[in-house]
Image 1 (cartoon, rainbow, N blue to C red):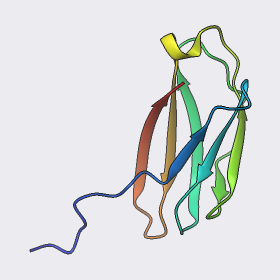
Image 2: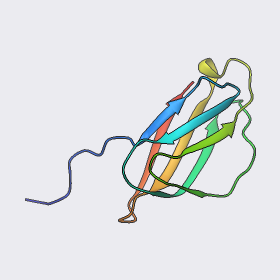
Image 3: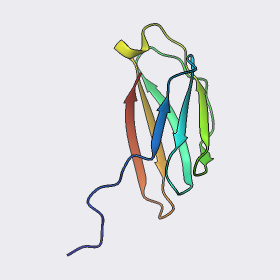
Length: 92
Protein backbone atom coordinates (compact mmCIF):
# COMPACT_ATOMS: atom_id res chain seq x y z
CA UNK A 1 0.00 0.00 0.00
CA UNK A 2 1.21 3.48 -0.82
CA UNK A 3 1.14 6.45 1.54
CA UNK A 4 0.09 8.74 -1.31
CA UNK A 5 -3.34 10.26 -0.62
CA UNK A 6 -6.05 9.36 -3.12
CA UNK A 7 -7.51 12.86 -3.21
CA UNK A 8 -6.38 16.41 -2.51
CA UNK A 9 -9.11 19.05 -2.06
CA UNK A 10 -8.73 22.08 -4.29
CA UNK A 11 -7.39 24.82 -1.97
CA UNK A 12 -8.94 27.74 -3.87
CA UNK A 13 -12.10 29.74 -3.27
CA UNK A 14 -13.01 31.63 -6.46
CA UNK A 15 -14.38 35.09 -5.58
CA UNK A 16 -16.59 36.57 -8.31
CA UNK A 17 -18.24 39.40 -6.32
CA UNK A 18 -15.90 42.17 -7.55
CA UNK A 19 -15.91 41.55 -11.32
CA UNK A 20 -14.02 42.44 -13.44
CA UNK A 21 -11.48 41.83 -10.65
CA UNK A 22 -11.64 38.24 -9.46
CA UNK A 23 -10.08 36.74 -6.36
CA UNK A 24 -8.57 33.36 -5.66
CA UNK A 25 -8.38 32.81 -1.92
CA UNK A 26 -6.06 30.16 -0.57
CA UNK A 27 -8.55 28.39 1.70
CA UNK A 28 -5.99 25.77 2.78
CA UNK A 29 -3.68 25.77 5.79
CA UNK A 30 -0.51 25.72 3.69
CA UNK A 31 1.46 28.19 1.59
CA UNK A 32 1.10 27.61 -2.14
CA UNK A 33 4.13 28.46 -4.28
CA UNK A 34 4.79 29.20 -7.94
CA UNK A 35 1.13 30.11 -8.41
CA UNK A 36 0.37 31.23 -11.95
CA UNK A 37 -2.78 32.00 -13.90
CA UNK A 38 -3.72 31.77 -17.56
CA UNK A 39 -6.89 31.99 -19.60
CA UNK A 40 -8.30 29.65 -22.22
CA UNK A 41 -10.64 31.58 -24.48
CA UNK A 42 -11.05 35.20 -25.53
CA UNK A 43 -10.71 36.86 -22.10
CA UNK A 44 -7.78 39.09 -21.20
CA UNK A 45 -5.50 38.80 -18.16
CA UNK A 46 -2.41 41.01 -17.70
CA UNK A 47 0.94 39.24 -17.66
CA UNK A 48 2.31 38.46 -14.20
CA UNK A 49 5.12 36.55 -12.50
CA UNK A 50 4.39 33.35 -10.55
CA UNK A 51 3.63 34.20 -6.94
CA UNK A 52 3.38 32.72 -3.47
CA UNK A 53 -0.05 32.78 -1.82
CA UNK A 54 -0.02 32.20 1.92
CA UNK A 55 -2.81 30.38 3.75
CA UNK A 56 -5.84 32.68 3.99
CA UNK A 57 -4.50 35.23 1.49
CA UNK A 58 -6.19 36.19 -1.77
CA UNK A 59 -4.65 36.80 -5.19
CA UNK A 60 -6.63 39.45 -7.11
CA UNK A 61 -6.79 39.24 -10.90
CA UNK A 62 -8.19 41.86 -13.30
CA UNK A 63 -9.85 39.81 -16.06
CA UNK A 64 -11.65 41.49 -18.95
CA UNK A 65 -13.87 39.96 -21.59
CA UNK A 66 -17.37 39.70 -22.95
CA UNK A 67 -19.49 36.91 -21.50
CA UNK A 68 -16.61 35.13 -19.74
CA UNK A 69 -18.98 32.45 -18.42
CA UNK A 70 -19.70 31.22 -21.95
CA UNK A 71 -16.28 31.27 -23.50
CA UNK A 72 -13.39 31.57 -21.04
CA UNK A 73 -11.76 29.30 -18.48
CA UNK A 74 -9.23 30.34 -15.83
CA UNK A 75 -6.37 27.87 -15.36
CA UNK A 76 -4.51 27.97 -12.04
CA UNK A 77 -1.18 26.18 -11.48
CA UNK A 78 0.64 25.87 -8.16
CA UNK A 79 3.08 23.81 -6.13
CA UNK A 80 2.52 22.49 -2.64
CA UNK A 81 5.17 22.42 0.07
CA UNK A 82 6.28 18.92 -1.03
CA UNK A 83 6.93 20.40 -4.53
CA UNK A 84 4.06 18.48 -6.20
CA UNK A 85 2.51 20.54 -8.99
CA UNK A 86 -1.25 20.94 -9.43
CA UNK A 87 -3.51 22.38 -12.09
CA UNK A 88 -7.12 23.52 -11.65
CA UNK A 89 -9.53 24.87 -14.24
CA UNK A 90 -12.44 27.03 -13.15
CA UNK A 91 -15.18 28.85 -15.02
CA UNK A 92 -16.80 32.20 -14.43
